[in-house]
Length: 215
Image 1 (tube, rainbow, N blue to C red):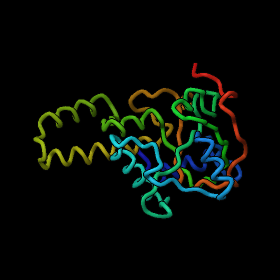
Image 2: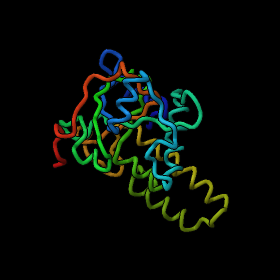
Image 3: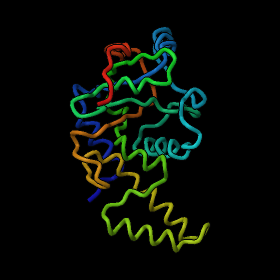
């Protein structure tokens, strides 16, 4: 039986919590790090985020999911901060490839209060980005595909399928689930989202030269 969205989120907040904090890593421009040191805390306005407009529905879904679990943005017009909880098996911090595209990147190691960060499966997140259905079995996948073929565009059936698909996305928060063959828990890449980055969360600053390459 699937956990409720809130229960799934809270389960993994507690699972990864050490002394009430979740260890994570976030990549940013050095200028943003300098601004954090000057300001003491930062939120991320949507206009400053690197969220691809093509995926705006996916990011809106994530923000709504966070709000449904009681993790509400401090003000309107914000994008959450994204971070890595685990990047790969026995490799929690980012790889050198994760800083590509930034002009002068730096990686911050953080200890964020566990109740503020929402953990999700990085690979299953691509189902949300691409608007794919997260099936629970082969028969479930086949049933959804048949229903999709028979549903007329804009029909009540199509609306119900859209709702069914979005409901399936809650699997991204169930990190120990085994749907769509995402592999064992130990090998999963786990990401996190939180709203406010505070200087006090920073436990280390990692230069890109110290990062290893993706295997």
